[in-house]
Image (cartoon, rainbow, N blue to C red):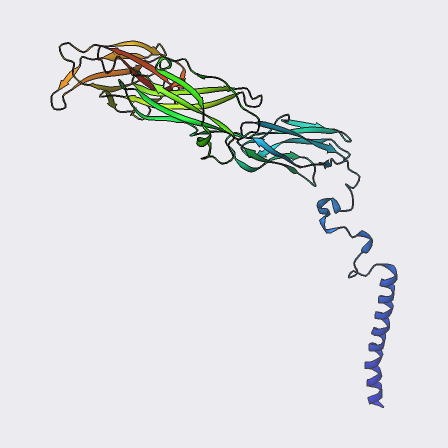
Length: 399
């Protein structure tokens, strides 16, 4: 009897707990979602990002860029030509589209765009320009624009071209490595024409009419047929001959030869001409660059100025004294002091100390170029037959 009472006392609470738990579970399912169930009605695409939350921004106006064409092939172009292509950018969104220039490769330029805003439903042309100079063969160039389209923050345009040189100059530059002042010299270049149509030369000239021009003679003559065989495919050609007369001023030669043609797309060919005139005359000193005939003063503080002292070396004169004087300076404020020549028996030479000075307060000025056109100059006159004129280029800038 006692055993059955104890069993009832144990089993009854268990049954009561099972019944209560079942009723509570049935009520939870009916009254509220089960916490472990996925709520399919609120699921969002994985790529929707921050805008997927509660769909609050689904109706916000947004720009949307559309580019019907992002690549263009110019095909075959001449190496001296500049070509352009116009791409179209459309706004197919519901808010203004803002675009601006991004990165581009060195010879591909976006022309007509700094920054712009395109209203919904409208479009804007974006023009890319390519300069074929210094290229040969297949070329691919790219330019990027930046946008406020959240799905496409940048767009890259690509242009392609096959760059050819149907008129070629060999060598591309005429260089006289060393010219002795009182001796003649000659150099040449050949022009090869690969075009089917004839190319007629209308003239040849020097681009710069400087003090060296009167000592330079130019000539151009057609190449013989057997001379064209070294360039397969050449239809015709010309030989450009440069003759330097004795007496060129000491210092660098920096010129350009213009060959004028009857071709509308290439009316002018340009051939650089470079060299240096030397003799027993030379210059030494701190800051002197003998390869360029140039004295480097560097960047100069306007309040302090700067100066350099160099030595002009010549062979001694027989029966008369050496005279050296300043003919002119560029700019005018350059000051030049010429000391008395000094004879050095050990080298059998005359040395003339020369000080070139930028005085305090001069400037501002910029003569910091590495060629004659963009550097200062000191022109000296002497009574020495080997050096009636000595040209010293001066490189400096005054801040």
